[in-house]
Length: 79
Image: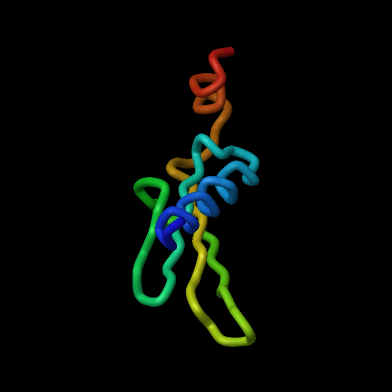
């Protein structure tokens, strides 16, 4: 399996871990290349540092596509 395929699998798994995965996008910058699950909203983003053997190798980011509101949740979950 290739690095891009492995990272895309990791990104999808990370996305599922968030409270609102349908409203969340994940981006991973690794060795100068960026991989993402969709369009990032950089206004609402959390970020971390990816270290391998104590060396910085990249930075995962998570963002919300839009502000969460009750009406948006109703649309998403059809209730």
